[in-house]
Image 1 (cartoon, helix red, strand yellow):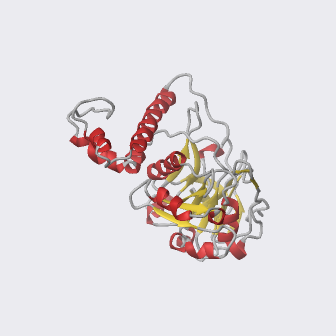
Image 2 (tube, helix red, strand yellow):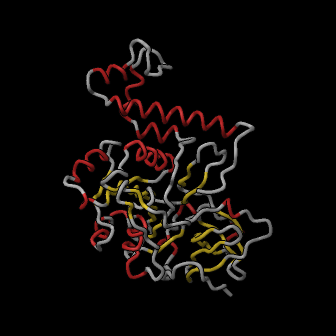
Length: 344
């Protein structure tokens, strides 16, 4: 008998596993002795309890003794005994979004099995190319497709300038201007929100993430996300979302809201940084020295590109900073004095 769930928004039961995001990637992980176990998707994670979405709707999972809920994330797929709702095991993730706090030893998982990461920023003082690049590195490394959403375009005279700056941060990057408050926002984002698709939203507090979640969930938002106001003097928002949860999108997809991130350290993200700064990555093999740091060596193709205007010097500076931070955090991760993270 399924236990009632009282701490998660009401979601319509999916018609089939694929509509919840299930695919052959997960099916292939099931052993022959696990055919009777039911696949469910983690909807909320708390210190001592978790809820999941099954084909019959949301349920409260029965956790075996000594279960570490910190090893699970919203969006995870798990196998569950359908008779007792007892958790059996978590399946490998197809994608994972995780970040590290400054000085932290263990990365924190924000969401799992996300198809598209909506990076939300506003057309005001919150717009920060260096911070957006951190989010992009996180998405690239984790296997999610990044899309930048620009909000509060009505507060500036020329939102196209912000759009151009954002689009220049990574090749092929989609940038969409949306008004989080209007129903039209759901239509603008529909290419990434189809049946069975999962999106997650990240960004600073106050940029409109929770408002956008409410707009995307539409008629299914029986329990809407609390929203907060903007401080006029510095365009910074008040933190409203405090936990992550999985919500049904009116068009058939799923959305994971996340708390605003006050700090975002990159770690174990060499591939994500290489994708982000493809123009530097592609020039590096043309340098005279294989281990060129692009700082002072003769015959450096990257510095030559800066000199002739082919490469933005600010991009090189930010690349160097992220690369150094990535290496330093790798040392913290393996060092004896690293501290474990306790919160976002």
